[in-house]
Image (cartoon, rainbow, N blue to C red; front, side, top):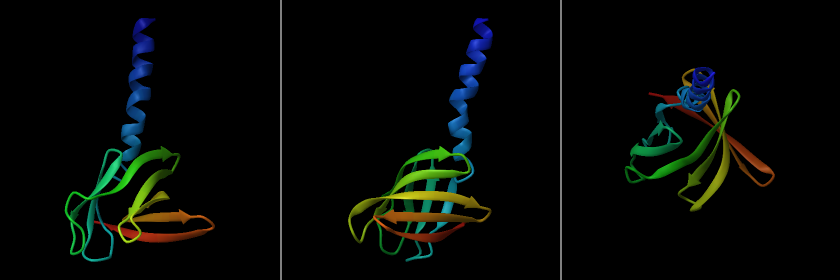
Length: 110
């Protein structure tokens, strides 16, 4: 019985990590030669004309069925916004919500 409970706990604890794998990797944001690496529950700039490498742009990435919810940082506004990420093959559709407005960005997988 202990073995079954232990196995179930292991399976449940690894599910969120495997769910992140769909969006893990390097993404071209399409602005200022900015490349973002998503790893685990965050995304950091690895190269850019405008931002310093290591800048945190995505945090609190949580799987939600076939989408991910996260917080996206806007360096221009110096503010965090709610975002929804959806994997679409080589594209990551990033929908940013600010009040009643929303905008969808397309990031290309490297």
